[in-house]
Length: 290
Image (cartoon, rainbow, N blue to C red; front, side):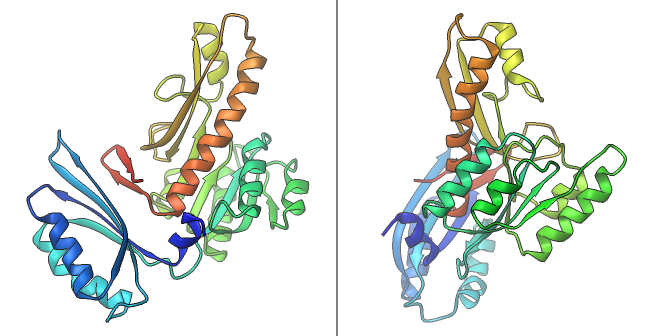
């Protein structure tokens, strides 16, 4: 059984709070007292902020209370220790929508990995401002909606997109080389639920043509970055990155080709970790738990 499939049947408690002695014992004992079986636990201390961060994955089938009641009983502990926390109950498969423009390599990779069982989610919807990905979505049996965008229709189209995402009860929105800047209203509708792939090693070379910028600067490494989307362009908390070495012999076209391989892997890793509730945000950073 893969860890992804196992995770879909387990519950995950994610916690961040000021560091102090005994936190691991407090959290573990709470789960034990309710007859929960801890499957995996991982923690991290941020030395600069004295912040304690923890992920606890446990089997809920033997609990003496429901998960809703468990959360209610954990609240006084969370208040006492000033915790920011979330209980991922995993009682249904998460639902992920994909937004794409003309470059479809990341979309193809996500759909293939989903069919292969690597991504434990449902994909009810692919949205695009171009028609080019329709056949690919149809091949995988995914509903495709084409909503062309102009400068004058952008806000109206976004409202249609939001309505469709809510209609299909989407928990996660993945921008698979979706070449549109989302409005604050769109981001507010899905806080910390939008993952983007940027085709450079951020914070270098933000914007739409990073490979051209990298070529002009004569860099020896190119990269890709997957991050949560915020109102500041290409500045959200980073989930995953990777790089590839290049040389003076590489053209812009070579950089684009090599970069596409990085983009696919980096995005799929970030999406998988998010679906498995392995990512914890704090400030402008993330912790990605093992």
